[in-house]
Image (cartoon, rainbow, N blue to C red):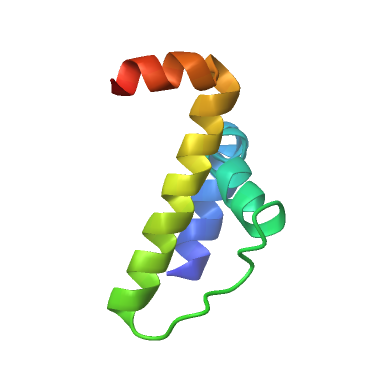
Length: 77
């Protein structure tokens, strides 16, 4: 399985570049800036909840950076 994946990566390097641009940045941000390098909870349900809260915080941070606090509050009202 790993060998097949490695072949696909080598055959289409543009897809990996795009993935790094789109996907890796949010996870790196959560891991480094939000200090979420590892999960504090155990068991799948608790880890899923912890991840959901982290993603929610990341998304709120992004919205605030993109549109600002006033526009976000107006959109929620």
